[in-house]
Amino acid sequence: MSEASPRLRWQCRRGMRELDELLQGFLERGYPQLNAAQRLTFERLLATQDNLLLEYFMGRSMPRDSDAADVVAKIRHAARP
Image 1 (cartoon, one colour):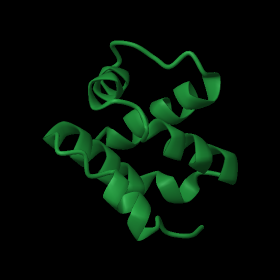
Image 2 (spheres, helix red, strand yellow):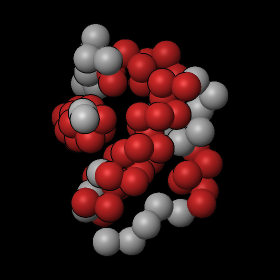
Image 3 (tube, rainbow, N blue to C red):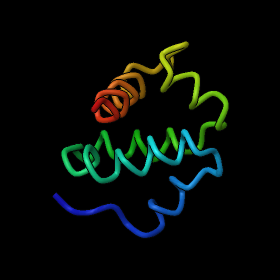
Image 4 (tube, rainbow, N blue to C red):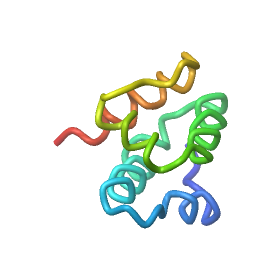
């Protein structure tokens, strides 16, 4: 599958170290395996406020949208060593 675009890489730079590491790591390890619909969902997630994204990725809450929750789970899984 294709690589992430420079625009998408830029959107993953959040200014919060934890989010930067999670999102940029996911671009390398998990994003290439996403299908087109999941990639669109990932892009939608990037419009979410940083503090809410961190809550999702730390497992403190989950998006109500099942597609977004699935992508959040993939991001969390990709972050595991």
